[in-house]
Image 1 (cartoon, rainbow, N blue to C red):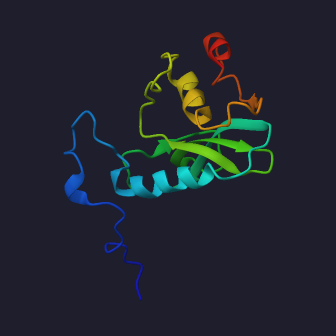
Image 2: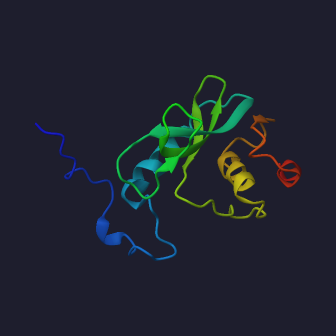
Length: 146
C-alpha cells in the first residue's frame, strides 16, 4: 500500500469558491475537520490559566499558506495560533492563512489583538480566566476590551 492520499476527502470540492475570490477559504478542504475539532475542544474542562501563543507545524512541501519563521527549530511550516491551558490542552486554535480578520461583534483591534479575541470567544465567560500572551499580542485596546 502506497502513501497515496488522493482518495482522502473531507469536503466537497464542488462547493469551493474559485481561486482569487475574496471570500475563498484556503482551508476549504479540511474545514469540516477543523470545525469538528473546535466543537470537541468546547467539552474539555477549562483551567483558570490560559496561554495564547503561536505554534509552527513543520512542513517543507508546497503550500500557499506555509510560513517562514527564522528563529525557530523548524524554519518552514503552518503557523497555528492556539489557546491552551497549563496542561497543554488546546481549547481553541486558528490556522493562519495569510490574514487575520476582525472578530464578529468585536471591535477591530489590529491583527495581533484580533486573534486573541477570536481564540477566547469560546472560553467560559464566568470562569475569571487569567490570560497569558507575549508582547506581540498585547495592546492597550485589547486589555480594555478583555
